[in-house]
Length: 357
Image (tube, rainbow, N blue to C red):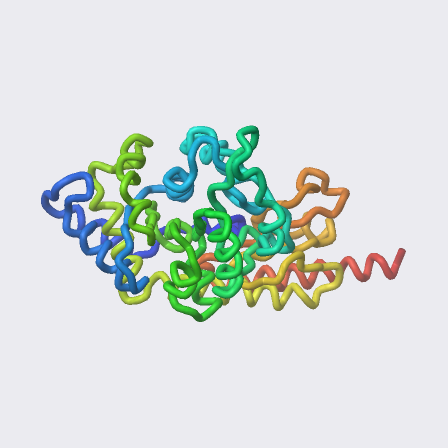
């Protein structure tokens, strides 16, 4: 079987496993009072060129919702794209951890919000009957694998500042976005107006570990308490921090992301010329969304290639639903080549069948 379902299906990078083994030697103080956690904070501050507060957590959902909890009161409104992970895939966790804040989903091409649409949507300030505008959450790379440039984030930040909104960035695939854009971590975050970052690592070679990075000091004042109250303060924090420290050592995070993006680019290039294949979004990072003929989908699945059906027609194959393919830090180029050979053969077989009909 060849799995293109998700980068969550990938293993852990060898460097991460070695770091965990090294961290297991001896004893260390608990709850983040250990050397790996202190070194991690210093390394992240170096990478982002600022004195940010850094909090390791185990999952992306925890990172997102705890970030939002320090930006949003229970009566607040959080503006996000309708496809965002916090709106679609986090089981009400944002509402739970904020004590009841309201998500306000916005439409936008290729899973991105535009500044002008945010400006139009923000409403209700001062009205006791309405949820009060509190925060904006962006995803970079987006749920469609597309990118917000620093300029686009800056434009959204200007709207947010004008209305007193905090700006959160879901960076589950932040490394993929960073290498694709070729800019600095600072340019893509706090210099563009981001106040809080969920810095993902699990999708890019880490066993289990993410980092919350808070660029506004005031946000860190209660974060530690919220993390503990929410059950996300690890007693043996060194094992989270050791993974993340290794992730940022010798540019492992960037090398992993470059490989994943390159494999997706190779897949997209090969698929784009096939009969009956239509790419749904620009392929800018490591996710590919495409519509394929049903016979091609069935044939690829029969040959052992795994991927997800996507979109509103995911459970209606007769409607020629969309599929998603995701590559990872350890995607084998030979698997990409085999997929493209199979897809080409199936496309040609489909053309032959139509000519005979």
